[in-house]
Image 1 (cartoon, one colour):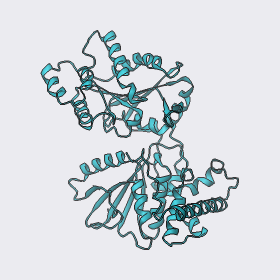
Image 2 (cartoon, rainbow, N blue to C red):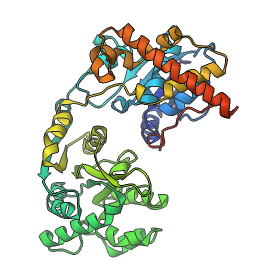
Image 3 (tube, one colour):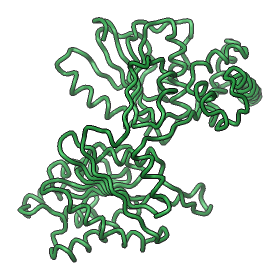
Image 4 (spheres, rainbow, N blue to C red):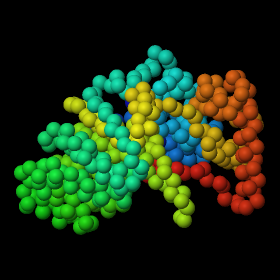
Amino acid sequence: MQSRESWIIVVAPRRSVALEVASELRAIAKQTGITVNYATGPSVLDKPRGRVVRVLTASHLLDVISERNGAIPILGLDAVVCENLELLDSTYELAISLLRHATQTSRTRFVGFSSSLNDVSDMADWLDIDPSGLHSFRPRDRDQSLVFSTTTFTIPQSGALFKAMAKPAHAGIQMAPPGESAIIFIPSRGQCKPIALDLLTQCALEMETERGYLPPGTSAEYLEDRLVRLQDTSLIDFISKGVGFFHEGIPKSDRNLMLELYAEGLIRVLIVPRDSCWILPVRATVVVVMGTQYFHVEAEGSDRQLCDYGLTELVRMQSRAVQQIGTGYFHLFCQAEAKDTFTRFLNEGLPIESRLLETDNLAQWISLQHRRNNGMKVQDILDVLSFTFLSRRLVSNPTYYDCTSTSRDENLSRIADKIMSRSSELVRSFSAVSATPIPLPRQTENDR
């Protein structure tokens, strides 16, 4: 921080990430006189007293900056730190772009952190980062030792597939040194207990013990003292064999107890559904991803669709195996035809494109300005668009955005006309049905 009165904003794409970052920063800032807050109120862009770090989600930043009077300057903001930029979506991009636009005449610095990307030059240009301040590393160049292996299967998505995966998953768990733990990522909550039973059966066959993964020397009294605290008694049989679960379907008190027992080493194997990877706050020496596909039902009564895990989900799961000290092991179980794709991106870095045009976020923000009598012309929209990541990618990869020209100005003009037309539709719709402002869309998944 540049002075005793300067302050910093840390922006995260998800609430779970923001809370994790705030917790880590508080631990670091204890002896520095810097206050770290997880910010949720409307005054997050107002200058605080003293040296303050405010951590907030991208969706909250977008709400606040959209409601803020643009004529009021943002005072004393020393830096904006953008976390997990590999998760950049429409909300995140628009929030940061509007903040860059609002601070263009100040000395506010923008700093970005991301998992490895295969091309970071446009991202750095978007955040106005000098080439000398750009540091990009491939995943395999990390300082921490991480052993990455893949095991492929040709069995279709079914119970038989996961039974076939149980043996190599057990072998992966056994790679953890004594006293160390393993995290198993699976497609859905409903598969937690069946997969746990498959792993325990495999353990009994190979280890010739009914104790499962329970650490040797664990006394019955020690175990009983902890098991009586469980609300969900159906978990007792699994925990008593060293296997736990972590997802939002488990009562919060039991989730917290799971993490406590995991930290104590009583739970050696923690089974986590795919969608809970974002809220999992712990790491393990061994991480096994049992399958990279899941079934999704769009609406009640509709057919199930088989979907692939997102690359960012796999990177998040992989990150749980990265250790500050010692070696981590990441085992990816996937279909044979997917191996090359996953291996390439996990080793070389993720692709990233702007998703700003995938939603109505920008059009709704413009319609909000119109309803406040802050009439916006096409030139005003072009000015805002020039601060977006989209404007950089239009030149680097125009075909991705259905643009035939290589001229950034020409492509932005075409996009501005479309957005202006869409915002006019939203204004007319608003005038016809309600006097209540149309809220900016909130992200249910990213804000959990």
